[in-house]
Length: 202
Image 1 (tube, rainbow, N blue to C red):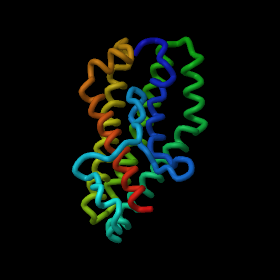
Image 2: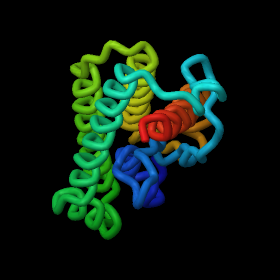
Image 3: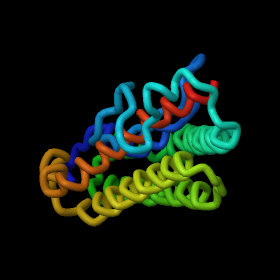
């Protein structure tokens, strides 16, 4: 990576705040790694998105129970990730990266952060894989989150691999543009469906 990475690039882990609880009545909403823009709220789309007619009818209790369980799990993942991002160890590493003139030291700390990010995402994947739901829509959204998080892990692994190759953020994103695009699309889709589930379970 280039010698003076922007803080947002060093803190790709901020993506983990994607599913943290939001203020007031706003549900958990996902975000992609630092290179991907936060998804905007939009009308749900895709095969698992609810139809317009479903908004006006009473939801099936089985769907509602499973959907609430998934939303609660996503919120817990967000809470845990927030604690990780706010930890003293993370703050110390970020501050040292900002201050040190030693490129090798800066790169080592950056890789440590990326590896920690991977572990947090792996924990999130395991938590979702252990979530047993029967409703087909809910299991589809759970699997979408898993796929999104696995793509995040893949991106962090790429950042580690490329750390010493001198690529700028822009060059890195161009080199792996297909994967970055997929990550953004997964984040957008998960955000929209998460919002739709939240509304349907109110």
